[in-house]
Image 1: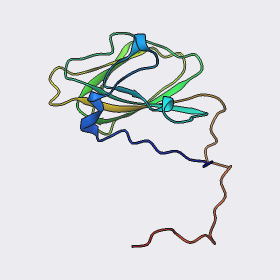
Image 2: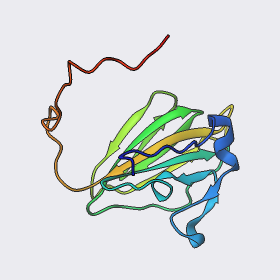
Image 3: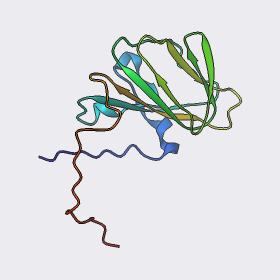
Image 4: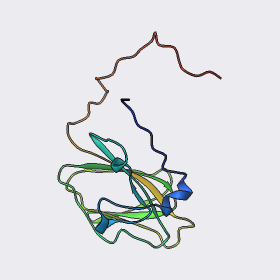
Length: 144
């Protein structure tokens, strides 16, 4: 057995065609729960796509989980407690525990709003990863 897994989630243009969610009742087009396809222990990730004008349709809050939203394409907005934040390609938003959140693709977006949502919980991360070891003797695998 290997210590890694690979899953192909397709190009950004293919994300909208996937129908999924955390359970059947909360499934929708344009959501792929990648951590249901890989054996994830400490982190989770969804790949998401909303058409212009489409929205989450609900607010939610986490007690233990922290999320990072990485926006890749399109234009949208996130509701974060009492604030509305504009999002687009290159916007990265960390949302901590206890913060209410929702999102939408702006109606005037020229294309789908596409983003990754990365979820994690558990122990606080060190500023510098202190559990790694460099392997300077190991040759690089590239055979160009």
